[in-house]
Image (cartoon, rainbow, N blue to C red; front, side, top):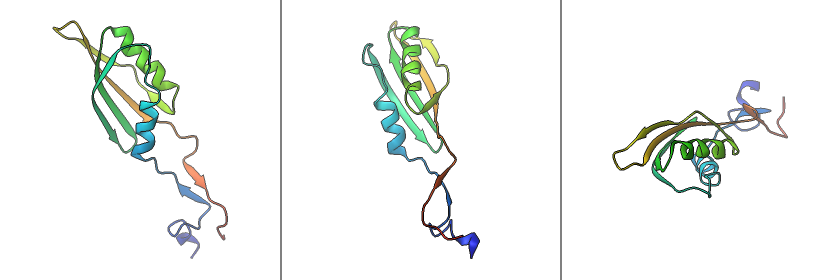
Length: 110
């Protein structure tokens, strides 16, 4: 029966599950407000986030990375490309940072 406690929510260490709304909130609330940016595509996968967009300069893409790092995201360096319009196309990949892999639950019997 001890093995079943986690399955029925009575275990001490229940795996932490990140949800898409938390990931979306981490992105939206940490985008910089001092530069112009355009998000073309935002993909949220279990354990990762891909952001594709446009900015005016390569350093603006780096500013987005620095801003997202302030949230609960582990962000990689942006991939950028100069478009014929003069704007910069970027792709940024991020992973939600979790302090612990498990969430302690009170009240479970051992």
